[in-house]
Length: 290
Image (cartoon, one colour):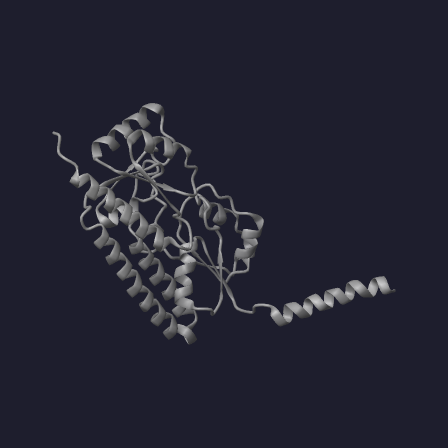
């Protein structure tokens, strides 16, 4: 009898603990860590925010686990960016258990870049842009205000403050890069197309349409990098750096490592801007031997 009572007692105690310490707030899901940063600024602590892609993970190769899908099932809404790879996999594996899940297109209004990842394919790296972040934040705030009217005023006020901060960040990056218009920088994977577009920069990717280049293609890209006057090679910490280190050494470039899928995305974009600006200034002070 005592053996039967003990498990029952433990279950009761566990249930009581959950009841006292459990979090009754609704859950909303986002794909990328930077979206969580934006959503927290808009919503405060009104609900839990579930990030499907862990920081420091390569979104293009990340395969969602069962626990990831379960966490999404418990959410009221999923703020998606409609990016290929991870999000496509998630959407393909959702079924009737997700019938009550609101799918919110947080990327609505963002003008996509095509051709960097294959003929006719859209560049998925829209989160590496402060200007795109402003669009995402506005879309998320609009959804929350329309579905939670009791807190709509707070959402709009927080979103306005966030937009002011993002505009100031954009202005700061533009100021840092003001003397680097048209400057080139090298990457392995073309993950900074939107950043380059925002500030008039030229991204030279060593990969071909987002995939590993052949030896001949790689040689052509390295020659293009030499001719461009680039001084910096930017590499995402989420990808292996071995080949990037070799190419940077062969081209005489300064290798800059940044994390492009993390909660500190703003700091990384500012670091990136400063490194590219420093490289452009270095290039401008070199004697013209032509």
